[in-house]
Amino acid sequence: MGQKRVLSGVQPTGSLHLGNYLGALKTWVSEQYEYENYFFIADLHAITVPHDPKTLAENTYTLAALYLACGLDPDSTTIFVQSHVSAHAELAWLLNCITPLNWLERMIQFKEKAIKQGEEVSIGLLDYPVLQAADILLYQADLVPVGEDQKQHLELTRDIAARFNFQFGHPKAPILKVPEPLIRPEGARVMSLTDGTKKMSKSDPSEQSRINLLDSPDAIRNKVKRCKTDPVRGLAFDDPERPECQNLLTLYWLLSGKSKADVTAECADMGWGQFKPLLAETIIEALQPIQSNYRDLMGDRSQLEAVLQQGRGRAEVLARQTLQAAKDALGYTRTL
Ligand code: TRP
Image 1: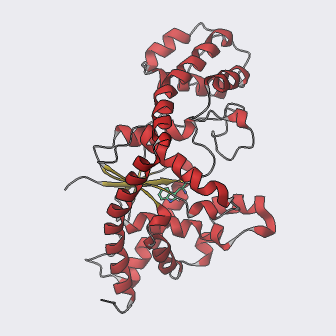
Image 2 (image 1 turned 180 degrees about the horizontal axis):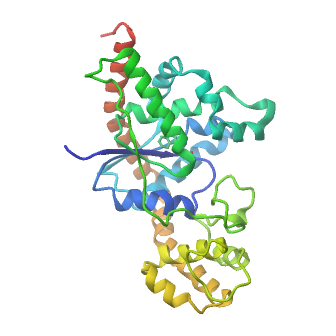
Image 3 (image 1 turned 180 degrees about the vertical axis):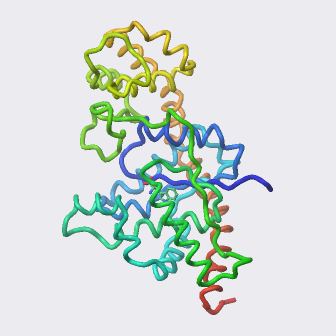
């Protein structure tokens, strides 16, 4: 009792990279005992763009294993697969019917992704944010950790919940909890290795732009060696003219575990030739325990399956309650 409920999800597409880790997972882990957590794998969202059935299941396992490998504790955090809890799709339908079309047409992410796909764009892609609203509202989440790119989706979730409550609830007994964003302190925005002004992203066509959590030491050395820098000697934080320097120094700061002041002093007179190998080895060392946990987990699927099974059980209890309350409010007959 008393702990706020936090919920978030990641799509099982592409591999997780340092941006996902430092921007999300690392904090999920370090704050997991302060909240009641629901972290899931958004595999229904993963088919809103063309996908390969052969890799969907594998990517789902990989992502679940990475959640655990990064340190999520399945005894205190509910970890589950979205498609295992059918209430997500069911609540999404109910919410579809109270969501005005033009709320979805103005979503920035839809517009961006739709442009890429042209004529092929699916209804699912347009509807993506309503499914996301269902994910959040099913669990009556208090807080949703959001990055910049998901802010608009959380706003929409709040609008949908408020509209549902207004139309079908009683002012004193809302049916769906209106969630708040959980905004994290500085330092967590990791940028591309090929352009320090763009976010590190799974969907960037260049592998060189990101470091994946499962990259080998050699791949990491190579990517760091070739990453974009600038011609200035001496490295410093907070120079708006030097986005790459800011990004690489921040990576070193966050992954070395040193204080910002120590890093500032240590790197003040360094050139890139000296800094890059230092950064590469720091990244390799920071990822080593995650990679070794990951290998153990993938070597024993039964443990992974047990975690997902348990997560599904816990998730379903809450999801079923909310779905029933929503159906009651909409006037559906109950079955016994
Ligand atoms: N759209 C999110 C992303 O791409 C993934 C997601 C799906 C999600 N459902 C969610 C995040 C619910 C938070 C809450 O990152």
